[in-house]
Length: 228
Image 1 (tube, rainbow, N blue to C red):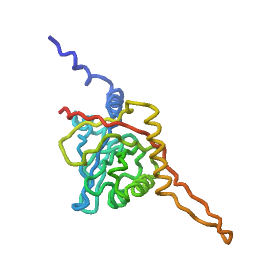
Image 2 (image 1 turned 30 degrees about the vertical axis):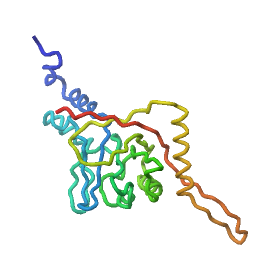
Image 3 (image 1 turned 180 degrees about the vertical axis):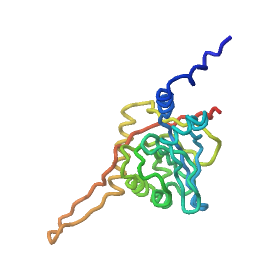
Image 4 (image 1 turned 90 degrees about the vertical axis):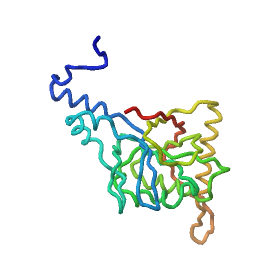
């Protein structure tokens, strides 16, 4: 019985068509990255793109899309990432939450300045540290090309290293009005915790400057073990 999942004539296709097929296999991934400030290194539970390991031809084509990123002063870049395709997911670290190290992430880590898709954890007010709102705002602002920021709901467990897994970000389910109120509350927390009062000239007239936020989108995280 023939294996219907195989396509034995693939190698006989014209080269341009084969290369186009390899490029189409490079789909958007959610790349989870953890920064270890003690060892000044980045790790990831996200598996490298499968197309890199199919054959020499697929690898050559994929290396034109993905590049090794997230290097630091003391460690070479080792995580494959496409800044204009993949989503960079920076989960909330344990203990200190979004601390000063993550606020300065783009200064400490190389090869990520062109990132256009960013995801951060939503932090509930009852566990949020006093500095986290400002640090998350500064972190978002440090990515000049980001088009929108996904806020990941329900990820209350601390970020830690584990085996390779595939991560997806999907629209949350539940009461639409409640989700809209939550998003409004999140924006207000940024406005009032990051915004600033100032006066103009001798009039002493006070003004409140609202921070400029990128578009924020609520998402839920789904995971499954990576299939080798």
